[in-house]
Image (cartoon, rainbow, N blue to C red):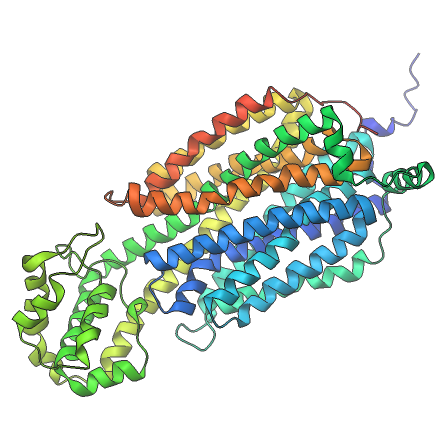
Length: 570
């Protein structure tokens, strides 16, 4: 007979009621450690292209800026993979909590110091160093939570840890949005400088980490290892066993799919949306923008004092619109400026025929010379406004262009931040949904469901997200589907490996795949600039090309075990 007054068993209570005050302290500190890591990652995703553009003085959407941004992303992912392996081994050998302290200190300082860099090489170096710190966060924080929580509460606690990381991403988006409103464009410090300054904030967490103890499971395993006299490296022990070796190799490939999905597809959609809204803003205001640029170019080739002012103010190609001045012209404002600047100091008051001869050999976006006809169009409208332009003050003309560019930059910054927030709002619910579904269905069916959802949702974003309404609807769906896979890894990988090598194994699975995914930015760049350069929206085509990679994950999951309701291996 059942005693109705008996207290319910601990593992039948809601997961959050199974946790003691100590459990909650550990969970909150580890969650913040990972969430602040993702905050720094997202700050980079939002600021990388503006930072490179600011450091080089080029337009944000030029091929040079895109190339440097790809290098920055790749170096961060390579550093991430390297740091993940190093810190994962340190977590098994020297302690999870001690490793967490140094890892957070490293990525905080490297990210924050980025706001002071003066050239692209410094920027790239700090991206690699910050990546070293990023790499260990997931494995160490997830391992501490997995080893510290009650068994029945473990999947939910790990999903909570991963889901709350999306709040770090959303906070980064809010920071970028607010900075876009309050930081004046054209100042000594741009929005990107202030964005990276917020990278210093995670150091506050170090004071709380110093009060934490190592998990009992690690203490026990470490003591047994000392008594047995085992001194083998966790890597040696891991790869010396056929079962763990096979699991970690499959895990690395499996994880790389989600990482490529996150960095190569989901976050690439932010750049796509920024490009879409830049294009929309320029099209809506093209008459005003083009008129100001015409006057600028006319004065530059006909007014010696104006050409001198342009040189003194160090105006560069990035000062102008990304798109062409007129729908029928083949060159962007920045490219026209670059060519005219070469001759502005030497000769002034060029005739139409002379301007045409300078511009005719210049290549367009398809790398073909624009020819005499296109060059003649540009020369004609430059000469047509020379008389009117001559009476205008140089500073007024420059300030008009600057105001136009600030208007575009603000719109693009706002929608980049909004897109990021929408994606990560969806990610929050997707990460927690994975825990709820996998608790009932198991790991394998849940992965299959979300991998299919990730593919179709991503294809929808790259195919149809062109208006404000479509961005508001489709981006959260993509975030829900793609980011859920990261929650799945958080729950699943610790369940595959024994305590002695758990931190190392989880780090390898989650981070070694980044060596593979580091080629993603270059592949995207290649698709955008070469394969799909002739398309109206090469970014959209490039992103859509990567989406079928999620199907590979469906195949791989059937070569890994189902771990639902199984205890952690000892």
